[in-house]
Length: 63
Image 1 (cartoon, helix red, strand yellow):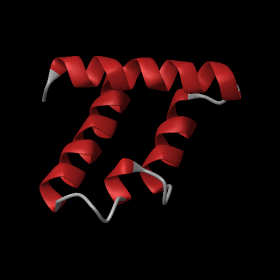
Image 2 (spheres, one colour):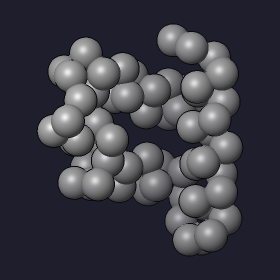
Image 3 (tube, helix red, strand yellow):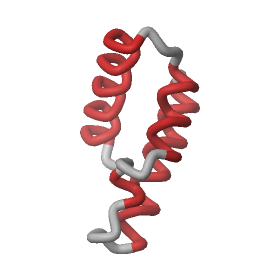
């Protein structure tokens, strides 16, 4: 996985947590299940969606 992309996602996660007051796991779960999630975008390939899901999973292990 691209470490730079993972760092950017980690920064987005921290910002979202700060703004919403929600916890890490809660934000990741919302990201994964939201229809607005990039992983659920019908305009991307299944490979791209799987990469996004792997990034979400990596965020869980970094926490």
